[in-house]
Image (cartoon, rainbow, N blue to C red; front, side, top):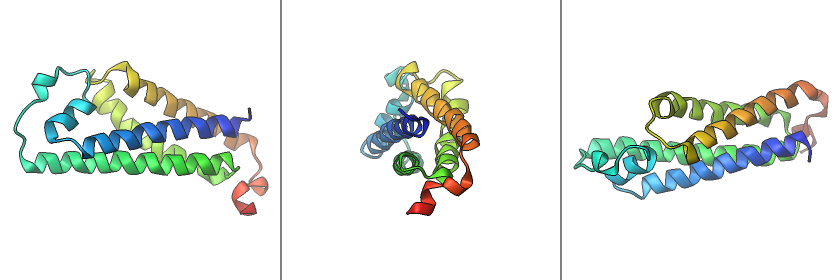
Length: 147
């Protein structure tokens, strides 16, 4: 299997998981949304009557999870088709999304290794492989130029 196809598969997996996470957060009340995200925290510690503003902020986060996921799935398809630009755009979207997760949820220990940390490893691997692929390809052979 070619390197772009491996990268594409990693981003589509990451994207599908994050799209699902967005749907879960958006379809939950605030307590359920926080519990779904901070899954290493005892659920009873997150059970509360939150102000509607907290639910709104959480829903914005769910929306962002969803669009990050959809965007990386689209990027994965474009990478599969040989689009060189999609390598860095998808890495930027998925990578920056996961960077915040890593700093604010993973490092403090609010999440379990699976699925959260595993998805950070997936995105990190996709980014590193994308950099390798970017260096290997000639811009004149860019898949986007073909269609």
